[in-house]
Image (cartoon, rainbow, N blue to C red; front, side, top):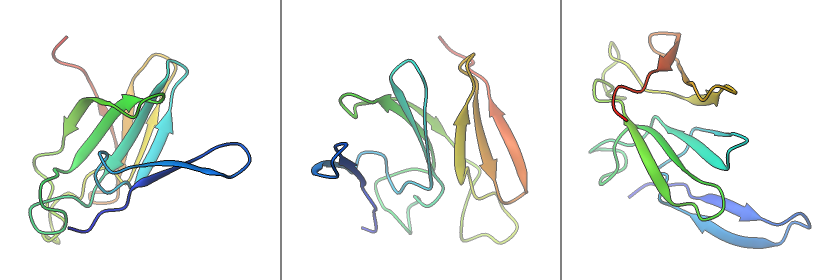
Length: 114
């Protein structure tokens, strides 16, 4: 499995922990509600078995993943297909945005279930 954990350090640069539960991160954002948003455009059945491409949302304090936004139509092996979000951002209203290099757009993700 090819993965790249998020490494956690304190203010003095001392290693605290590593989180592998966010797949293979390509972008990270934080909000003022204590959440971390991690885009993963690399995970699929070929490049990172066991993980799926999408955006994982978790708690900053624990690293616990609470929400997953699946990107089901992406396939990094398909030169004509989508690649998923390479970066992620969140605004103060809680709207989530992902920057997708193919097809070169910013995608706004809208909650459809509570």
